[in-house]
Length: 110
Image (cartoon, rainbow, N blue to C red; front, side, top):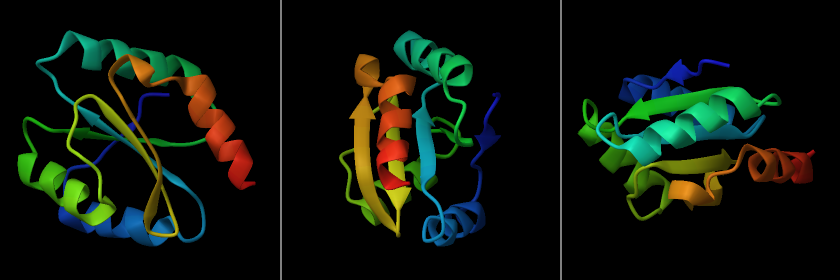
């Protein structure tokens, strides 16, 4: 899985709406951080049950700030957020980001 780039407010609004029919997985990625690159590689190789939406927080800082406000999370990077019914149901950062745990969270919603 390569991931789908999140690069506009319009796409974020679409994902928020989509979260009412199925959970959405967002990954806030810093291209300047080796831990973020490690987490992204783990997600790309380990997630099989969902699409991964990736936000480059360096390029799209305003969009990152909107995610923080909209989903009531403290900004971190790297950061993984699962959104369901328009709300954050899971939030993890740094080396705590685990494809296995993410998929268990998604299974709990099924």
